[in-house]
Image (cartoon, rainbow, N blue to C red; front, side, top):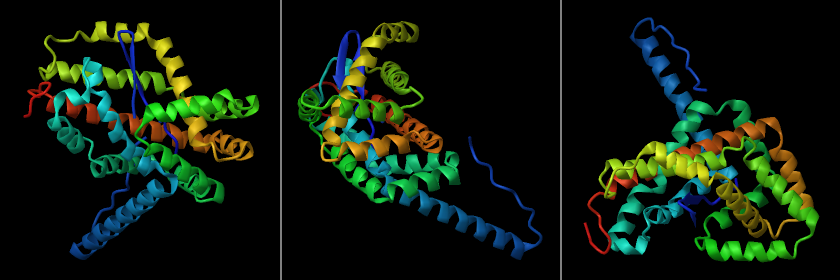
Length: 296
């Protein structure tokens, strides 16, 4: 699964960074043995479901996508007009703890358990287990783990400058299919709002932030953010898929445009954005008392 690096926009400044509940039937136990049997069976079903979802994270590459959320932590100080290096070693320690990859995977699995149905799970797993699917996952995982976003974007832009128009069009169609619901810009804005408000409530900022004014500022920059995210996503796609043929990418676009796959990506995007927003809120609270160039 390929996801997009997030761009934060605030007051004219863009910082590029590191993409229905199911109910369970209730039975009435008749006697202790029956109750034990039901309990054990339910536990076995939940364990089996968890194993399927863990396999889903691996075969689709979504697990690595969740891990890569940790790379976005460096963008938090930028939203406050600072940089991670301003905070010394304490920042690294706190960020590593808050963005612990095992914790984020557990959060992702918890949401998927409630929201992903068998059709979605089977459809996505079948595609990504195919030869094309595994080749896609291999290059996507490698791209997620590349920490130097500036270098990656520069190489992607250089590739785009020499690329045939039909391939550029395919990459654009692919990016549109990955976010068919068009939630990317609003999700980025909401993450910023939740982080900055949490920082304000925690006393990290010198003065409280007015939520209405913050949303108004973000709304003013919405189109600029949308265009920047589009350009960044296109350069990222050019870099990520440079070793795949245009024919392969067309096949990928067709797969992404299938209604069931679109539902899968809508859910995975929602999971990723919710985990990111949650972790940034926790990070904001942990930043209280941590001042530039000082240790906790």
